Length: 386
Ligand code: KIV
Ligand code: ZN
Image (cartoon, rainbow, N blue to C red; front, side, top):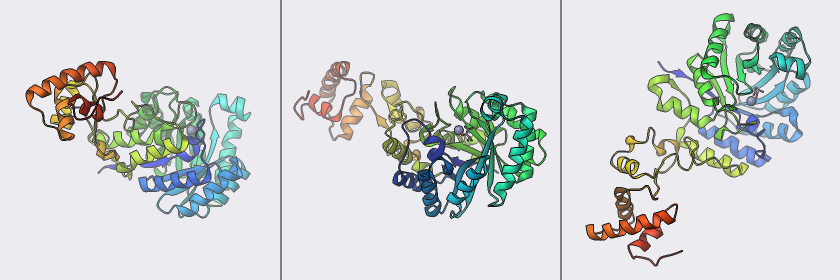
């Protein structure tokens, strides 16, 4: 029986903290509706205490969204938790996500609190949150640079105080997948009652390992993954939703896990975030980059034209992209050239095709990408353009 992994999307909170990615109220509502259509289990709609605008956006999202849990972030501070509750209380399924740092460096230099004071604050503030609702997530910020035995005590305290989701963030994107796996296993083996809560991962991408660490967490028994569309987020971003979901789907044989995500909505969600934030993704970005399903070299094009699986491990249609793009350029071969002409409605004799292909190679040395109009010019159907 496959394991169900909950997808916790934080595009509207951690994603929005990415430089240049802030969104206005109507944009946030549009994104929230798309996240609901995409099928995320939980959406973190913002950080209510951050600004009155954030609180209002969370409240409107809470009122609008019916099929996903709506969550607000809060520090271990009473007024944060009050603001979070004020913002999410109208939701069909509200959640409050409280966090406190647990690493020596954060406790000493940021919080200026002793480990015992941190434990007491976790106990007090999770219990305080419990006055409002039962759906409580606790995050040990900078968990991956914390002392493992202290982290066990923090997790134990949060569970006893009433948290039912425990998040183990790699806040600075520091760990490797093997280490993250070991940490989750350690917590599962050393904290009583951990089997009664959902363990969650939240992995940043500073060393480019956010997705790999999340998948390692899943293998170690995590039941919730925190991620963002296009991987936007603080610094180098968060683990990207589309990469995690498609890894689980494409390698179901390996992970044996499912999500509730309608993968056909991935491309649309990604385009929406690019358009709203004005932050484009790299052409080579897995799953949704412009080149993710494009084939330029002759050998690859020949293979894909005969059978797509030669060079595609998933279909563009499965993520909502209409079809794979055969890009004609100097690496393209005769098969792709002939196939594109056929798509355009032109079937040439062998002699004409040979000549046109020769001209195509000369042109391709000059132009990076050959467009359909260039092909028509080559075979003399339209005049040559600049
Ligand atoms: O990266 C982080 O640790 C966070 C927490 C607030 C969950 O974003
Ligand atoms: Zn984060």
